[in-house]
Length: 346
Image (tube, rainbow, N blue to C red; front, side, top):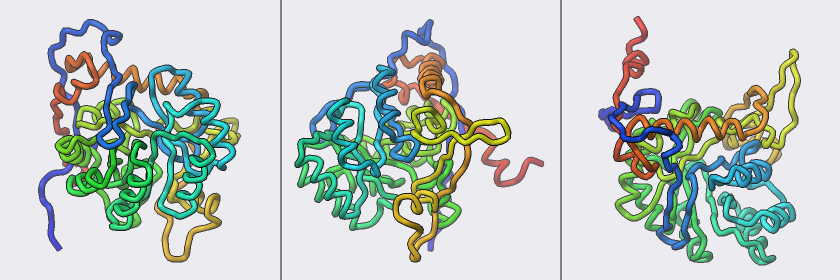
């Protein structure tokens, strides 16, 4: 046993210090990015925000809305769509705005193989597991890279620099960073495992960029300012779940109660998700997610305007003409919340 005593920070523990700026309007800020992925050599051009591969978020309807938005955002489709539905979506909408998600179970790999065999062309893959620290996961990533050398691979989740380096060297183009920060994730409560998300982004970005790789900050963003903090900390992509839930594009039934409308939102390791997709919670594990009702929010386009507008505004406050420059212009100020958490608000 050992204790690491250096301070680790979450989004709530910092603010971004404003600086003098030559920008006179938010409309002069370019929030798109251009990347060439390390292993696939494919390119990305657009706003690097990704809808999470969760029920109610990573949906066909969300992907279509992102295409309509025209900013180059993308969606990691949840992995539970039938093969026939995936074929129809890709044929109609192409592959530019979507990531094809798989886990490590044999059925997921076989479905991907069959999809490609039948003419599907997913150029971006998201290999998603709760615990990216197992040797089995690293081996699986290597296997997929060898099988599909020209596919762009995003994989995770991890929170430390050494594991980011291992995954990049195993063939990952974009490493997903985050264990336990999501609003409907209970991993930290159930297992005691996790890492404050802001510090995880800073440390993992440093490790990835040294090897020519990229990271995707996954989880913990609850307001547009958190998205800006993630990019300011060095994230190349930011993945959003709860901020994009509750909209028309969720492909869920609206629940009416007390004259108000709600939609269900749940973690993919929750009992709700496991009952729906796996027939229940296996006897050897516990639920690590929760189910909540969130107010019905209408179309996602309004939320996107708030998120992108907030990001542009952050850039004007620190003088970053392009999103690419935001991390270079960012100075974080620690605030007293962390001390209040430790000592109380007396």
